Image (cartoon, rainbow, N blue to C red; front, side, top):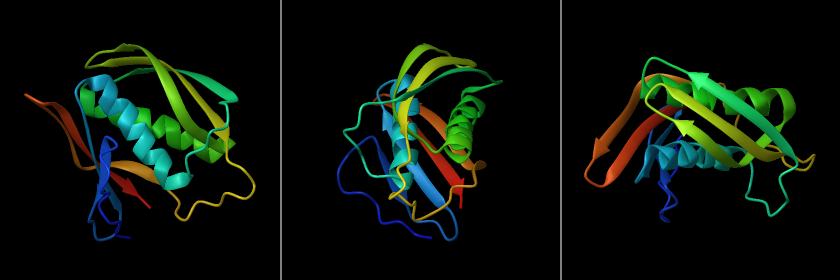
Length: 145
């Protein structure tokens, strides 16, 4: 499946990929990268909603490096979505280092009239990168659909 690159700068964009979905994320801080990755992922599953978040989860993750931490973060979102219909709306990140993340996720349950066009099976390591530059950070992520 190929998605057209988004025209509005929301902190993420979708790039051409032959079979999966490739997303580029940017932000001035690591926290923005993680939040924008979550927002981009969520945009694939549901339209934005003004509904007040009704579900909260605490997430504590440890990994060997920032790339693994980003993958684990998105895997948590996939898990909660697949098991409980969770749609991410925001997160309060308490700690974020190169190897550790603690956050409280907030969101809602997918409504009965909301049927995602695609099914995200997993986040992959294919083409995964997190880069630091003078402008901040950028990451490339591929989702298996």
